[in-house]
Amino acid sequence: MPLFIMITGFFLFPIEDERKFFRKRFTRVLIPFVIWCAVYAFYYYAQGVITLQTALLNIAKIPVNYGTEVGHLWFVYMLMAIYLIAPVFSPWIVSASRKSMELFLALWGVTLTLPFIHLFFAEVWGECYWNATPTLYYFSGFIGYAVLAAYIKRFWMALSWRIDWLAIGMIVVGYSATAGGFLYRLRYEHEVKSLELTWNFTTLNVAIMTAGLFLLFRNIHANRGNSLLWRLIDDLSRMSYGMYLAHIIVLNAIHTRMAPIIGNAFVRIPAIAFTTFLITYLGLKLLSLLPGSKYLIG
Image 1 (tube, rainbow, N blue to C red):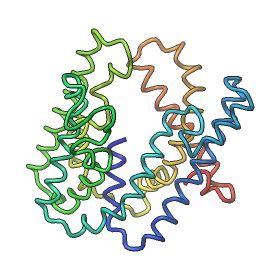
Image 2: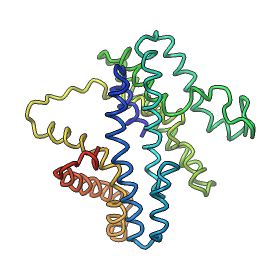
Image 3: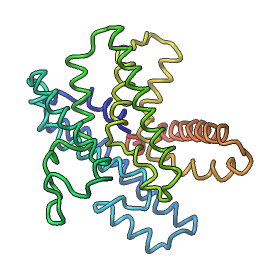
């Protein structure tokens, strides 16, 4: 998720025509989102999980939250917020000095330590039950990933083996903290919310790992031409949003069939993931042939 936001931030700025920007982004993102929310509502109704009344109520609740109980759709609400704030950030990102952007990112980095600080202090920097916006609140959240990508685009795009080694080091450090923290807490945490603390997308270790991956691949150049590989990558990128929206339906079906027959988790998880990815892509590819398919796949 953070890597996707960084890729978004890399291509997001500068924003020159706000009306054109909002029209394009919201048409391509909001309409498919609403349609797939409705699809999920009737999907769960068909599965017998909810009643028809609940399905219709879930559709009506789309402006409030999720529309249906489909966890992965939180991402779209967050993405809409990035798009809404992007025109505000755009002039600053274009003209800001390197030190100014580094100061913002440093303060954002401090906010990424809050999940760990809260293990020792329940309330910090002005937090209390009547104040949910403490110091540095306005530097927090996913917008930091978009700003980080814009910063790298402006100041860190030059080819350099030193940067590549730095990126590898960041990946190792970030992954070690993420996996190590999870394995450590696995011994005594029994709730998923607490157990996956180090997997939180807005934690410093995940940000370090994400930035390292982004830096490592920042200068990959593809020889587009007419190569089959490039055409496949290009097609996958066009299907990616629709695949993200739709994949849970496929995943549920694949998991039900494959999980009982593959005992080894190191085999089961990649097998289910790859099969889900392939079938979802093929399904969206077929949908893309329909008239008006942009409203389904984005």
